[in-house]
Every structure is written in structure tokens, then in C-alpha cells.
Image (cartoon, rainbow, N blue to C red; front, side, top):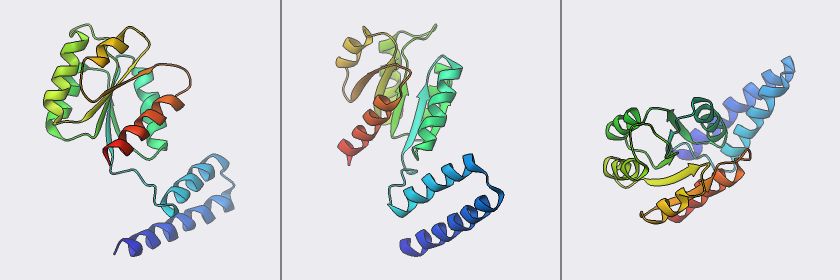
Length: 165
């Protein structure tokens, strides 16, 4: 049954690939090609749900865009209380957070996320190296220092999922 669905997806992708060639849309073409390659190699990660919590709205949107391109189902927010509500409503496989919040301390955020997420893994993604010690105190938490290059974060997310599998 899965192979039938994959063949339909591949035919669907090839149809749009042909349309893209006709209209010479280079940007969309590269995205479609990446998507087709993911489907053909069976590395589609859409089952993995991520929640991004970052007080910087622009960084939150950037992370969402980049992680969606990697094939993850991503939801983001810049409001801590909204993240807690989202975690209670639906399960997430991984939560990526920045500990700066005007209303909560870092350890409070981590505890609330671990309580309401039902055991989701947590990655601290902070621009402050001092939070690495904070991450070491809790279970199932990785620390990634923020930088302009998101490769290290993406690699840590992939590694976290491979450990769990």
C-alpha cells in the first residue's frame, strides 16, 4: 500500500516538475527537485513534529522555514505561555527553545515543557554559552549555540531523532 502511495506522490511530483520546466521557474524547481529526492530516497521526515520557542520573531520564522525545507512538520511561537498551551493540545517529538523570557526563568521553562510534552526531547538553542550548564542539569536536553549557520542545529536535530529510533 505504501509503495502505491509513493508512486502516486512521485508521479504527482514529476507532473509539477514538468510544469516547472515549461515555465522556467528556477527557484521553485530546486525546491521541487529536493522534495522529489526526499520522496524517492524514503527520507521523508514529515512524521516528526517540532515546536520552536524563540522570543525573537524573526529567528523563529527563520528556523521554521529552514526546518520545513529539511522535511519536518514545524510550528513556532515567540510567546512562552502559548508554547505551553500548544504542548498540551498536541504531541511534539522535539522542542527547540531559547531560554530568554521576560516572564519565566530558564529552569521553569524546561520543567514546564518536560511536564506538558509527555517526554519530548528538548534542544536549547541559545546565544549564551552559560545556558549549556543549565541544559546539563536536565534529562534529554541538548545544547546548541546560536550562530548564522544553522547546520549544527539541523545536525543535532537529526542526531536526536536517530538516537530515539
